[in-house]
Length: 107
Image 1 (cartoon, rainbow, N blue to C red):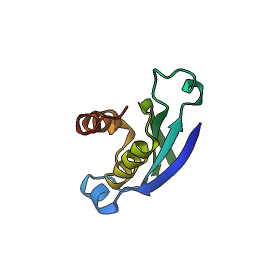
Image 2: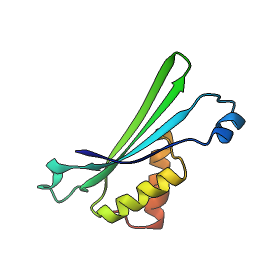
Image 3: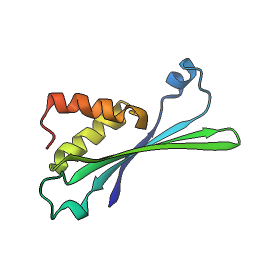
Image 4: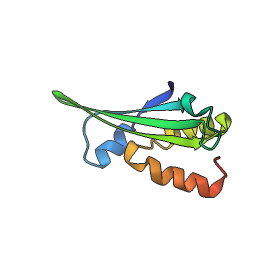
């Protein structure tokens, strides 16, 4: 099950500095791996990030889900807050989670 956590639009100035002149929205979801509750060897919570680019006459969507991140719901929510604050996109989620795992024990 996927539960909406938060969303943000990437800072317009940062986009313009990168040569991007259309809005980009990021959405962050907490994933609950219900089927894994029985299997205690896998993490219960994951993360799903969706990036939507509103290009003139087109919409481009990119997403990435990391299913097994932690058994601690509070840690997942802390990570989701950090992802939103730093405008983390789907392409960067694995690297960012790797950095988090070095800083704290996720599972």
